Length: 242
Image 1 (cartoon, rainbow, N blue to C red):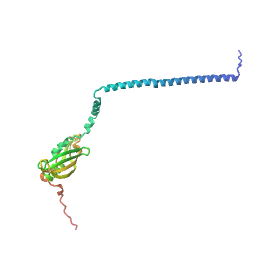
Image 2 (cartoon, helix red, strand yellow):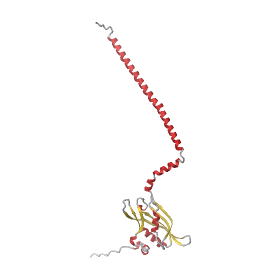
Image 3 (cartoon, rainbow, N blue to C red):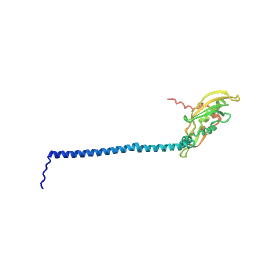
């Protein structure tokens, strides 16, 4: 069988070109339709599904808010709960100020050199104790009180269970001393007294804290009433050079 191709080469090339063109157009249309479908799905998700989810979330929030608002004294309950979470930290870091009353009962001398305290201030930020006081035995009582505080110490049990002892006070200052009359008309010496206390005094980590008077074993009135400044070590012998 003999076939005769009556279509010229140019015509055949044109047909192939049109076929390729048709394929490209068809593919482009399909890609475009797919893109439109994807955009439509995304738009549906954003404007429909997300909107529905947002409305549901808003509804749940409103319902939860109504339930909370229906609780009586809600603000007080929340405040108490917040404070409860901080109780442990507060207990760990708090100062035990009540120990200062035990200190007073020990450091105030006995009659006739006792003093009366009219104002007692504890500054835990500066670790200072300040007293406004008066003495009936004049400057002698104040000097004895100062020496008593200088000789005071605290004994305590540390976190390891060991017994420790440290001086109670430092930087002791007596100021604004002047004579006056008490409510009954008796002449008294008024004065201010302040000192820095050791941090172990009010620390919660220090257990079994007690205040003691040491004065190196000397607590007599004759020692307490004499200023320390008049006592010095004996001068050494002068050695002459030969």
